[in-house]
Image (tube, rainbow, N blue to C red; front, side, top):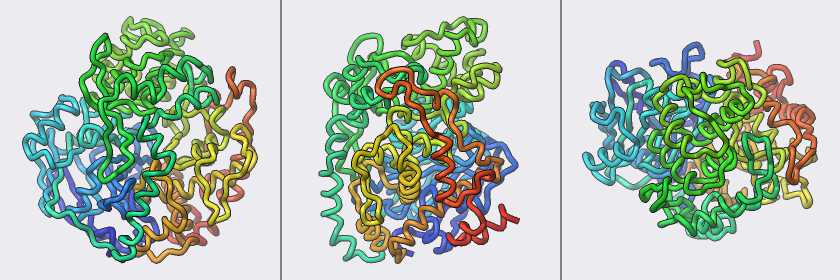
Length: 623
């Protein structure tokens, strides 16, 4: 096997055992790697009848075929399983340095089941796997633990660490790689917490990987790296980070305000812009392994009530989630909120979305001081959010902490009010891109995404901006494509979702997006030796998408769950998209028709599954 190693580590924390498995090469050619390969393993071995925080639940870390390549965009890996936040299929991806180290150690993935008898961490050194005591780290923040583990084992050891919120089973907690790079969504930090697993620490002695056609790869590697780094999106991201386009988003209606009750806050365009962060607080730029884009922000807020030491800065999602979404345009406060969430180990999207819901509920009287431990939840009160609300959530402290620790949907159901103004799909709080302004096609892909509302499951955001097009497969940017229209959106969504499945299974960074169809084929064939043509590559992407939907169907999800909340579908109240109606149901029906998805079950028909080489899978869902 080339590119991939074919080997994974399986660990049972309950009995303290581990073993090395070899996966069939067919799995890789059909499901690629990353979240696709994880889905194939979960389909075969996963339990659909247990709580996602039960000891028997699977936690899967999986590389793509390009992990370890010295090329921009290839250093990500996926974490997957049943999401404790949503109760169905979940996956999350992370850049940084863990994926190359895992590959150099000789493995494509890591499967963890069971529950350790006490706080533990996993230590991997090449072929040696050891379960170590983590009692001294339990209860401590991610930065302190990351530093302590590196001090103990060596600064070149790579770490995955959870924070106190995950130990307390807050359902939207993260796993942090080397103190900066987060698997942010779907709550897999809580799965580690439920297993008494504080960290994974890894070191490989070698730094090489076996490539199918090294000469072919080296012939285009340097040019491809240059092509990626010099592309306009990459240069903009390097200069001002992921918030570089926030200003334009404010005026198009893409940036949600006060729990999506507004699409326009003009002052935010300057106050929260990526350029404002660069000018006011940027200390230096950071990067994932081997990446020349360097989009990461290292910031410092030197003084004032929101002062923080030099460290990881907020991305676009954090800036909006702890900015306009909760009624604030204080950039220093956003930096502090992101810092606190990192230390506690919480997803800023779900945390901000849940707090925004609670603020609206408090404003409406659906939540009272009796429900919130006498904490007033007022729009824009960042001091209360940072000093009181986030710590309470992380500790599950009092009525307020317990209420918000399971996310906005669970909170609304618990109080019996406010479900209509939650903002999610399939239980996952929506990211900070409002499709009413940013593009109606994104509403469709939010609803179709197997893990729930997601802007990185596919490149639809970029497609509607005119920044992604694939003329080699007949999908060119349609001049004049109107974002706030349903025209051509189902067709565009299909291509977008297929490529999203490819990218996430390859564990490729969405920001290294300058690859053409021939570039993709060159990479897959020269590195992993898949021997694909364009048609088979696209079939693999579609196959991954279909398999994740089959997993959700076994969890009880149907076409009815391919939906958005009333708040997300009501016409915008102001800004450019004010009053524009969205033809969501029409787009959904057309998408089902084009993809062969049954409009009741929400899964591909038996014929479509068989056409995509999934006859065995079809037997489980189509008797």
